[in-house]
Image (cartoon, rainbow over all chains, first blue to last red; front, side, top):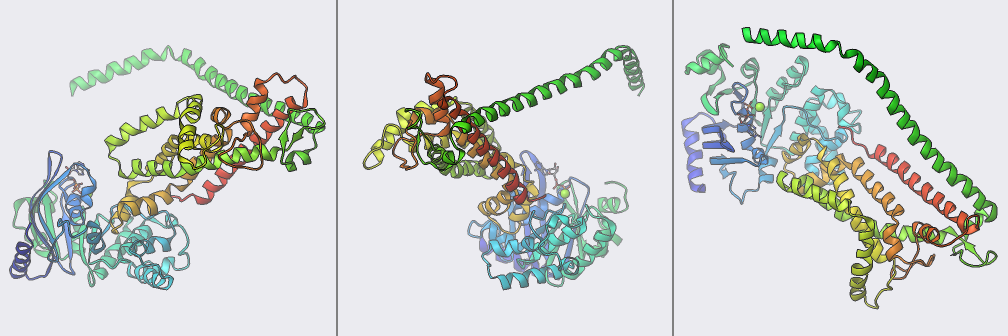
Length: 269
Length: 317
Ligand SMILES: Nc1ncnc2c1ncn2[C@@H]1O[C@H](COP(=O)(O)OP(=O)(O)O)[C@@H](O)[C@H]1O
Ligand SMILES: [Mg+2]
């Protein structure tokens, strides 16, 4: 994993494609024990766009996005090979701390997981652990993040109430606000609307459209319509491999791989 | 398919056959709850009986010794002629509280550290190995701890502390009571921390929190009610602990506490009187009920406090 090679990779990515990549992934393999969950993944993630990942259940979507902020390493039996370059830095380089990576690459989970604290403390949690103590600064960050997650108007009068009093959809937007509070560069979302009702889902989808002006977003979804609605590029995963990865409109209207076509026309999965 | 059907049929007929024996189980359904109810009633009445005895004997005591003297006198000196005797519970209470305080200074930090290690750092394998060891430690008879205090810890302290230490003292049993309580606090706190959903740890990790920050700023607050409950149970246990303080603490009740000198706790006093040849009906005899009552009130307050605190600190998730 040589830094100079990584630099070349970034430049190559810029030349080959018409976007600036935030992530360059090359030859990524991942095993859970003997189970080969990701196979030779090659993937460039564009800046300030929405990248959707679709595929049948168990194909490795969650595993893949959890490698991007190294959360996958919480599973003790995981082994990996290959390289992931985030803005010129090899994320597995011991000098580049995993905590620092995670302040740049935030994550929103499938099930809303606010802390059992007040709405305010939830959003202030990230800035606080990174040493920001000034009350005025925190107040500003909290308001800005809640506004950014389109939930400010609903909670501004109850910032000191427990986050678990919110509805599921509000909790998920609160988790997005919590993520925005440390001003990340990339936001990873793992099926963020699968536990939500249709109206909350719509709100989160609108929010994603809004957020891509400032953030690069990778979203896993099992819902193809959602991918078609909100993403710029879509990757189709199958059995731990990237079958096809291209513009969303191309992938849905003119897939080049038979398996992609079968999947999007509902013939399997 | 056809095999499935024959299977289903035979199960159906088996159920049919078993229906005949249902009448028998119907009797069971009626009788068993009654037996359980009787058991519950017996245990409630036993408790009431204990409290009743405690109360009547305590009243007899207070008909001889004024309640004001009992709570304000700082001297406890019953083994003398009746007119010279002093019954000031403060001396015994201070003995108990000193030992309890020393025990908690030992048990809370160590127990909590063990709990955090087991719940947040240890691999599943290590946890599986250490948890049973904790349970074994918690099962060691307290008399073993008592002799450990007297024959090992006290001589050790005598070497370490400049100026030495009395053979009977508050420090040694205090430390050993603390050691005895560590497994309880560790185990109960670990249970509370383990019950915190992993999703919360992931949420914090994804914000760039270190494992330590996750443990201290997410898991511990979320588990606080259980953790505090374990502390209070530990305190209750220390207040009620008898064998260790009887063996290693001595029998010199004093309000003038010096941890290197002999003291006496409420429990140790009760043992001392029960073992002696104090006659039934003497003031000394009744005094152990008054002391027992005080002990009872202390633990009751601790339990109420535990409930109050854990409700106040509860973080719903
Ligand atoms: N913690 C784990 N331990 C072992 N195997 C896992 C674990 N998580 C996922 N897997 C396996 O990895 C494969 C991909 O899972 P996942 O990434 O969760 O798929 P998806 O999100 O696309 O449904 C599956 O075969 C799954 O069984
Ligand atoms: Mg998944």
